[in-house]
Length: 178
Image 1: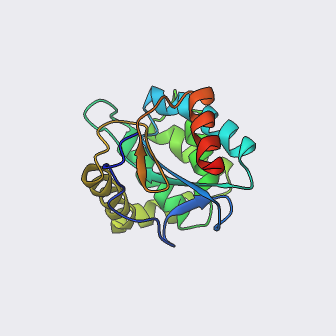
Image 2 (image 1 turned 90 degrees about the vertical axis):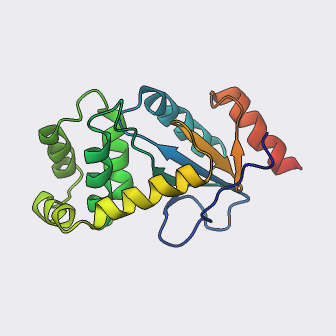
Image 3 (image 1 turned 45 degrees about the vertical axis):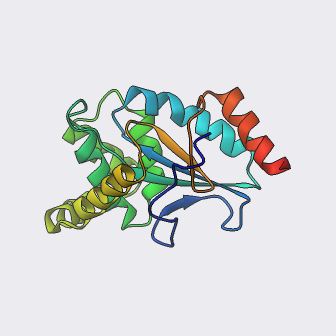
């Protein structure tokens, strides 16, 4: 593990968080909704959340790689706009579960399916708040040394091991035991 590569922006109350606030493990994921590796990691992270449900907190931050994923930024902004309505994790999950179609029309359809008000979300996007949040996440990722997606930090330190289930699960178990 890279003990010297630390999360530059500590986890705070404005982060999108799943799991116990007092969890012994805090996993921060920098992700891109259109990245196929993030799509693979999504199901693995869900398995990890199930296995470590009482001891793991998941934080998601945006790192849209727009040069290779043309729909990633729009998806991230919509997720942030829907998050303002208290449905971030619902749209996060819908975007990853439907990753193959992230057209504007599809993203709006997913927002409706999770019970969000699309007009309110579009107004929020037009006002620029979601874009500022995505840009702040992106800057934090770069300052933290995240150079691709997905990038994970565990308890503030970048995890450079395999994010496949077994090695990642073993690493988290070792941290819990240590």
